[in-house]
Length: 276
Image (tube, rainbow, N blue to C red; front, top):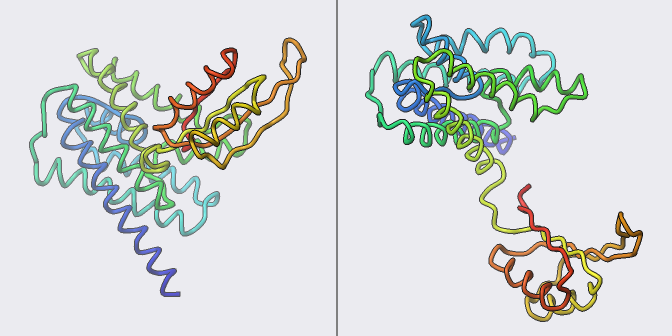
């Protein structure tokens, strides 16, 4: 039981850190430079520009109805952690903007977009890693995706795109939309970094008529013991062809390419991130 409580406490601590990091990116980088982002923070920044209401309170106003709507679709523990994350983000944002009135870390748009996106991405990543949600449209998107054939990832991208493109009409400077797009891209990379870790290995597929020789060369020169050989046929000719699939360190990719080039110049090498 103690382990269970310790695990839950560590989740809440990570959510606290993630929420504060996210709020710092919004308050100290994006808002002062009229740059928005995806999700609830982006919506709150746009509404704040029109109404003057505090960004944190707008986040709460957006998220509370969404939580109430989705409460029956998510587990109780997940719901409690999500509410906690929403409160931390909203309160931290208003403390930094309204109470402490801290100055912007930079007024250089490109730095604000990159580091603001990084802060938001890391914050969201920590929250998602802790089995919670930072709130926003992603809650409804998740429910809709489960009830329809639409892909959740595509729907999130669509919603975020609409929010970011709105910056081009809301803010007087069209550059705000372009910087916002950059920030959203960086935040996405930050989320992937937390959830998937730093990519250290590659998945390599090798299509070759000389698969057996290449296999022996790989084992001899690289000492690689994993992987497998798959049998198949070419789509356009119907001829049989063998496919090697293996997982290697990043620094061995070039060596694999050289082996394939030497023993089968017509061979095809496809490289992907193992973390995917």
